[in-house]
Length: 244
Image (cartoon, rainbow, N blue to C red; front, side, top):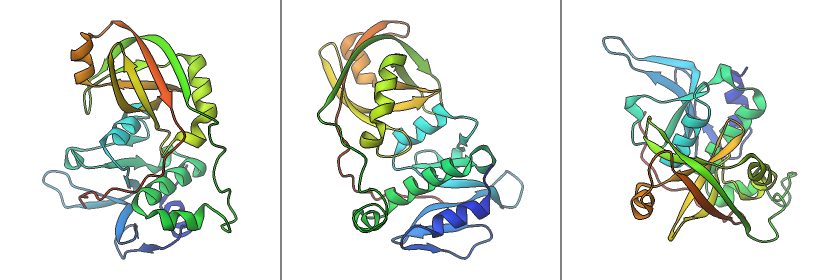
């Protein structure tokens, strides 16, 4: 069970982090916020700073939806955060190890690659990198397409347990944060790039509307999916708008 003091300790242990004076906590790197206390706004009430809930920068909408879908007891959102890459974290629902992972991922997405190299790399006292895949990992399996209604409706296919075990073993060298694994996917004659979402100990494949239309797919169809997983590329944080 984590709290605001744990957020502060973990955030300030990261390079070039600045704490902004606030009623709760507010941490920035390179002038950009990556974790802060939730300013709750309820109709007819004054704003309340919730130090038991953290706002985390998550990079993009796909990562946000992965967290909301995979762990709804831990993460949530509100209409005020629609369309922005921010997710709300219930601190009491995570342990210190998980909190460190989440705070570090948010910091890494907001900081430059040079800042990240200060924490992970030669001379940092930490491992330079996880062992990289010797080559692309290719998987092929069949599964039923299912629908998740929100907050952002989407269709998915669950990866079989045996293939999930192989993905978990390689995840450290391919994920770019929050357990997401980038892949090249193909169904029939249609290919696209996406990221696997972790959910309940498995991974799920998001199936875009364009893919469904091209291949004539409907909910309940059994679909054969081919995936190619490459070692993690260098990823520069994108400039994003944020609401405070």
